[in-house]
Length: 197
Image (cartoon, rainbow, N blue to C red; front, side, top):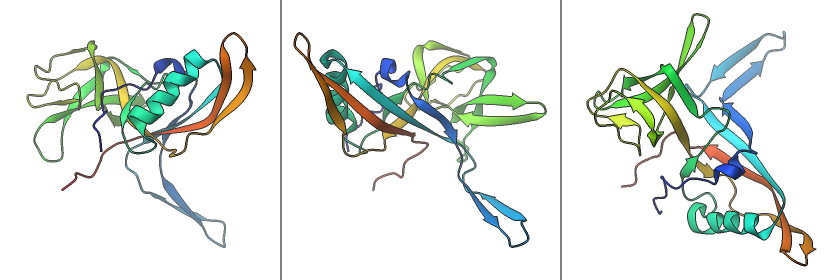
């Protein structure tokens, strides 16, 4: 499996994505109408769908090249810009010690009333981050020394959730070539991977 973690899905295309954070919950309804809920994931995973309607060759050919050369269906991860949540404001970013007690991981804090949720940030954007962590790794969001604050822009690590590319010729433009649409490009955030042995 190739390592494309720091290649970015075209941001102009991701701007049209529909989606956001998703949790996984099982709900069991009893005969009485009462229910029991089990939250399987302690943290969210982003999921988006991009519909790429009626594009000229200058638009759809680079997307098809990205699909073939980088994503290769569901095989490889890449950076993805979620336009609804790509900025951490001053006061929202900090560092949390990892479970292994080693390096410190960037997190963004979401506060509503007296409740706070910590989201792990793994793909800060170099040149668009302000932090007091002296050794921030922009490929992982980790710092061995740690820090007390960070703010700026970030991506998420993602992959496609489609192995086939479902392109459709919509029209033929005499001067520009084929007009192509590509509906249902499914993208999911990758929150961690099992290490290969």
